[in-house]
Image: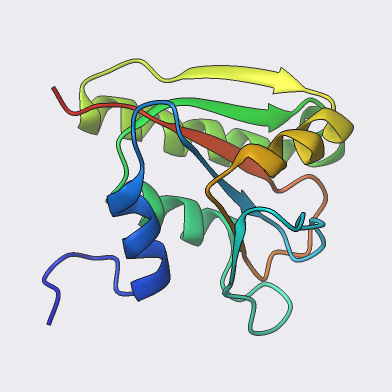
Length: 139
């Protein structure tokens, strides 16, 4: 049995295949998932698992170089935005690197999910709870 925190075999497989600058999207329950990327659906019911739970668990296994977030989260979901930034700050400290954060419109974020290796759907039911994580290197 796998010893690490991430037990979901589909997510673990995607993370293990990521190369430098490949991306992985984590979204809320309503994020449209385009036809190209692998769809990994974790949503059980409203709020389970939460967006932040999924981001936290995935980033324990994934080296993150940068993140893309919808600009609209700042005004439409400020508490989640603040919590997400705190999580990314802790991740930076743990990884020992700076994670650059880029804000784009929600429309642009949805377009950019097409280039992700996979889109992970959480059970989050709050607005703009979506992020695209870009893989870094561990050396």
